[in-house]
Amino acid sequence: MEDVSGKIKRTIRKATPRAFKTIWWIFKITASVSFVMFMLKWAGILKWISVAVSPAFLMFGLPGEAALAYVSGFFINVYSCVAVISTLELSAREITILGTMSLAAHAMILESAVQKKTGTSFSYCFLLRTASSLSMGIVLNLILPGRPMYVRNLTPLSDIPFIDIQPDFLPMFTDWALGLAKLTGWMICLIWLLNVVQRLLYEFGVIERISRFFKPLLTFFGLPHNTSFLWIIANIVGLSYGSAVMLDELERETITQHDIDLLNTHIGISHSNFEDLLLMSACGGIWYIILLTRWIMAAILVWGRRLLGYSDYQPFNL
Image (cartoon, rainbow, N blue to C red):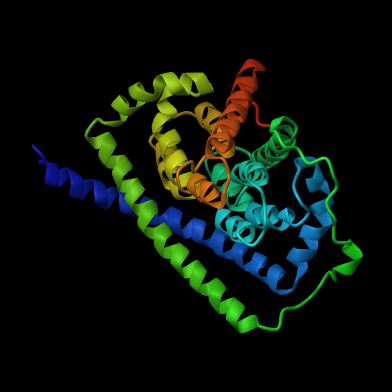
């Protein structure tokens, strides 16, 4: 009979190839999107895009300059959004609204690609998350106290050149490359470790106990109880790092595509509720409003999909 040490070694051997296959796939997308955004920033185009969309941010009760934070987070990640927020003088109300929007719609291209890899349409995830993010911004601006009753001064788009190439290409490129290298190292360690832990939990029969414990909460969200482990992973480490675990679950046929679609609807809006939420809270946002708003929106979307009978329907199947 195989002992505990033997089970662990066998599990590591089985988990490692799958984990590194996923790591390589995510790295290619991350590096590509990150490089394109670096070039847009270096060429000044990212700033032009942010100024172009800034008038719409009055609907969210946000100043025009907040658009750069949202756009950066939308295409890159939460860290880039936080970096911009730290340079702005925003109130707790404004950071809460911006944080809610950004946590629902950050790293959009990469994370929508991750969700597509699990079988849910890329465009469905992209459009759902974007529309939900904007909707929550509008609603929070309407219901939170202290709604601004004036129009902020906006920078005329005509004053911003479409292309404004920065002179310090090499320092900017070096910073980008070092940031990508650090992210890659973290990604390798975390994705591999998560994949090993997941298989060990199955090996020792822990997954079923986890599912039973979280069943009441997932019932409230309208999610199948067998998605509990994936829900936990998405909430702790997010979609990108948890992708290897999700793909492994599908391969093992422990979860159906129907269940994955419902889960993706929820975690697309509400995931990474540990580190990212702490970051927004540290910036001055009200963490429980950011969390509860996304939980409520996610529950509405999942139950709406179930009640309307769209559980097996894939709109925009690209």
